[in-house]
Amino acid sequence: MEQLLTVYKCFCDETRLRILNLLQVSPLCVCHLQHLLEVSQVNVSRHLAYLRKHGMVETTRHQNWTIYAIPETASVELNRNLSCLQDLIQEEETFRKDRSALNDLLQERDVRDVLEGGGCSIPSSQTLSPPL
Image: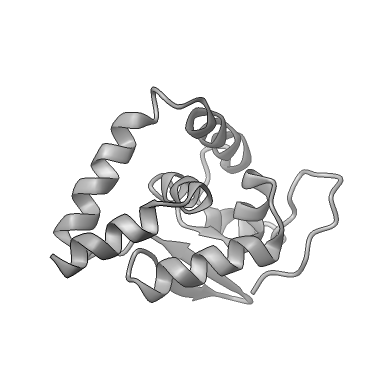
């Protein structure tokens, strides 16, 4: 029961839902999430820290970047709720737009390939903070 409550607490925020929606497609670094969600680096980092603390995401290092992903051995409760989230993507415009922007960003490449190609060069006029 405790794990289920933890999942629901993590799912009760729009930004965290949007992050989890995107991480179901590909592991991402903070700067990519910042760009895709159009929120500050501090905001994204705070939500990622919350999700990580509660076992909803895991991290790996790639050169100078921290890459966030859905855990490979996610709990049954998390997997079931992510499946429900997946079903809602077709219904919710925000999720569809986020996925479309992610597809444009990755252009069929893994985020590590994007980073290998020169780092987090986000196609935006925004000035981004350095990745974690």
